[in-house]
Length: 313
Length: 178
Image (cartoon, rainbow over all chains, first blue to last red; front, side, top):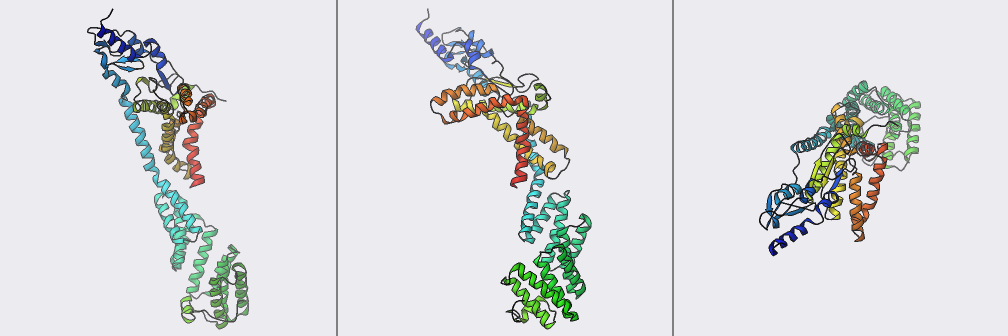
């Protein structure tokens, strides 16, 4: 028979423990395993089965460390009353040092993997942007993005060659055809050429020939370009311009016919109402009618509203 | 069909076991659930385990059971995604990237909770579902998925999941979306 304070203390402890300690060990304990479920460790639960009031009425042994502690300080862990120190240990169980080190290593590896391979991701994204920009006709962006891609992944041959190729095309758009020919020829020597590369190289070479007043070469390069891309309006226009130059230089009607034929084909492909084509057509008509070969700038200075021959071909 | 003992697979993918158990323990600590015993890796069945007191509510039970699934999957993706670029996109033979891919896939292969986790979650979910707990109701298919995954583990489903998350998903993103 216990005195009232002792009985109250035992009641509090019983309430704190919850179900019978022996059951607590197996039922409350739960396993989370990577493989199969294994039995719960019964140590803490079983230890509490032997936890008995000892000493004064307010003290009892901890279910884990078996140190005496005040009853009111006992905390239930898996249905077993343990001292605050043990409860704190179980609830904030520290990770072993090697796990902490392993976690740090895995985290560092994840970061390292990202940092180390970021250039590959950047290079690929820039390559895709360059490709899209080139398809959309934005040569400057394409050249800039491809150069950046080649700088990020220098070991990728396709990026290096692509950067050279786009740079060559960019030089053509900037009117630096001689430099473009050098860049594109170097690129072709490295990669063996390709339809697109050959097309732009012929364009640059044709433009250089025009600047040098070598209309024979200009026409030859334009015809070759048209063979490479028979449906290219640009190639049709270039051939028309080159044949017109040849007619202006020689007076041979066959070249005039060839020029007009190309203009008709370009008109069929583009539509006669296309404003850019109409401006080009007027410039060619001027060349064919007057047999004068002048630069576009000179032509635009002379005919700000365009040459008026008498109607589209 | 080649039958490879589970312990051999566990050894080959031991980082995943450690991460899985560490994730269990991390969520236990976060939710104030006492961890009575823990084994991060051993050659046996199970390859690792965490013994903890019963969770007080469903949310805690859910986090402890399913937490490693998310942690392992995210880590698998985070390690594999950058490592895949030099190999898959640029066809470079980069030994370090292969090591990182092994690490990531190993972690991903141990993402799925154990049947013990599923049992605990199922028990809690049944009680919580009676109170119309939305997460508990939503977790029933997840528990079924875990059981199915374990049934298919014989056919290397767990390893295939790791490969899928670590290699398949990044390849899909690289090839289709970028």
